[in-house]
Length: 222
Image (spheres, one colour):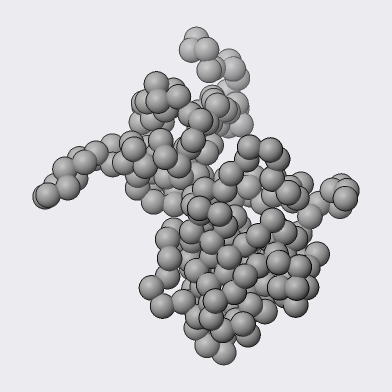
C-alpha cells in the first residue's frame, strides 16, 4: 500500500488519502479562487518548501483534482487549475473554513492574510446571506496586503481576487475586522474603534455587514 492509504473501503478514508497531506487543503483553496502559475502558488503559500509544493501538485494531478496547462500566445507560462472533480470540493472546503473561522479571533503571532484566504473568508461569510435587492453595490476589501472585491447584485453575491474597478466603498480592515464579521461590532462601533477605514459611500457599510457574517463559536472565550 501507499503510505497515504488507510486500507479501508470508505469514502472518508479515500478523501483523507487525497487531502490529508500538509499544505494540500490550502493549495486547493488557492486554486479554487482561480488558475495559478507555480510562482503565484509560491507567493500565496509563504513558508511552503518549493520541493513540497511540486510534490503536492504532482499528487493532486495523479488524483485527478488538478490539471496543468501551458498557455498559448505571448504568455506561454504553465498554469495549474482545479479539474471538475477538484471543483466538487469547494462546498466541503468552505464548510471547513467556516467551522475553523468560528473559533478564530485575532491572528496568532506570525499569521498573515493572503488574497486567497480573504476571498475564501468573504465567500464563506456570504454563504447563507441574501444580498440587498435595492441596488447593486460593489466593494474593494483590503486586509493588510490582501485585496478582494465583492459585488451584491439582485440578491446574489460575487466575490473574487483583486480590486473592483468602480467600487462604491473601499473597506480597509484593521485588527478588529474579524469582530465586525462576527457581529460583535456594529458598523458605527467598527468605525469608531478603528476596525475599518472607509473610502467611498459610508452608507454601503451596513449592507456589507448584513451580508458578510461569520459568528464566533459559543466555545470562543474573550
